[in-house]
Length: 250
Length: 251
Image 1 (cartoon, rainbow over the protein chains, first blue to last red):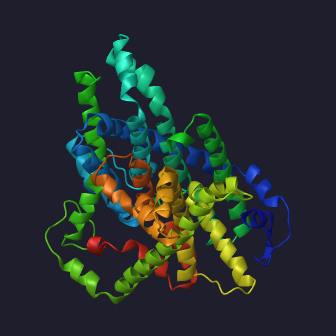
Image 2 (image 1 turned 30 degrees about the vertical axis):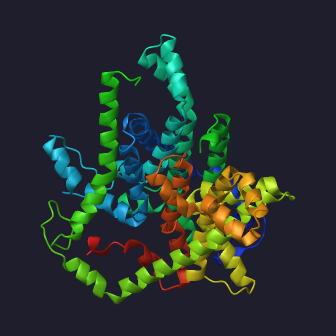
């Protein structure tokens, strides 16, 4: 259905959708600089969110899986997933208020002596999205850490490896599929999200573009064609992830 | 323990930072719910509970909350039934296309939300044009949510079924239980996703896959994108249905 409607086109005079198949929408996408810019911007955002989430999730998952006591661990896991129960919009609005002018973020930066105002910048969107998807990233990484057999670690230290060496040569390769699995979530969710950029920021991302075209502009065919951009990106991403063994880590 | 002292301190600091990142925004929302002023000002002038009263007296808000609840319950029920049936079929029987069931079910959740929403909305459009009794509104919203939830239930149940020893089922049948009793006694205790709560308390097994699944299920009861897209004909139910479950944050 999506494929079919992406091949139709909008009659410029009547504003009606004509059910005639053609590749016109795809030609528009490939030739139009707007779509390329927005796609690149969205990719950078999704990558940024993913990197930030991994940076936060890694120590948290490490701590939960390895260092926390057996009694603390279930509690910690529950705390990690609890924010998922809170409503999506509530969380987005929380960030909207945090980064708003004279909000908590401004107050914090003032205390630190920095002259930064997040406001409706891309950084606010980046923070909000990172916040939203963090639990999705922590869980696969945690699962990967938990799956590392303790005997491997013992073997490694018996063979004379120091802790850093063990981490680099044993733990990291075993945990990496989990990290990639987590990144699938943050990456694909950032790629498709259109509410957060619209509410927290002002910048147009792919999701907003599709939403605006399907809604306000009533150009469903073009919107459907653009929707294939994130789909193709995700297909490539999933193929790479599968090659890295992320699917077994899900 | 294989970590050095420094490494442990670094990891603990990182973990603490991540937890703070997770919880500070939520605490702020709670804080604002008690704020006296109408706008969001910092620091908020505390302390009033009047917004809760306002929220509970607002009939629109209550209808919206009720709509959310209704959609959530129905979508969950649909997803539970369909997901369990699909998992049972895949687990127990061999049939044409069995290998692709999993992929087809996973597709809606692995694609960006807006794409699924768009696909659904154009499907609803077409169904409506074709004279089927399907239009935008609460039914479409429920369908949308159920699409998301089915895969979660499916994965979850299938994983548990694979882990349920076949001998257990055979033993039950040998002891004279009929299929329903077997399902109830041997099947449900082993497969029902709800049992994950036991696993949170007693981390004997590897609970994580199921915890993830259950939480995604709960989380996907309330995602907005589908609802927003599909709420077209329902006087914006979907739109108000979303932002409001937590009383007073938006005065």
